Picture 1 (cartoon, rainbow, N blue to C red):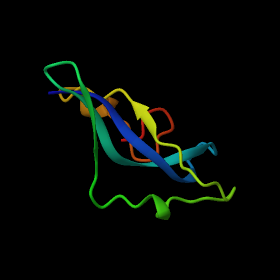
Picture 2 (picture 1 turned 60 degrees about the vertical axis):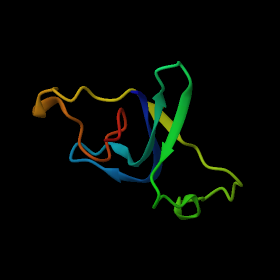
Picture 3 (picture 1 turned 30 degrees about the horizontal axis):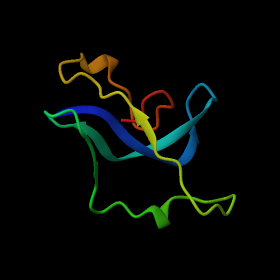
Picture 4 (picture 1 turned 180 degrees about the horizontal axis):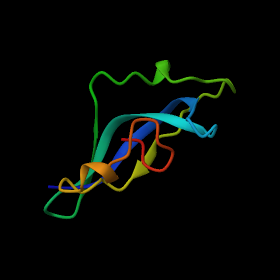
Length: 88
């Protein structure tokens, strides 16, 4: 199997040292591709969508997909938690 995407939900915001508002995300799973080309979603067993902030009182949540980071990427280029571009 091959990981195609990490799945993440926005759980809040914070202000960084430069005064910019950034999103805080939690990784909730992954989209995987099977050897036969089929796709599957793996969700963290402990993920509870009812716990995601809902200021607009919507009946659904947004789950974002991000390309997975390379495992051999240098540590200095790895994003920190809460980074808007890639959340983990």
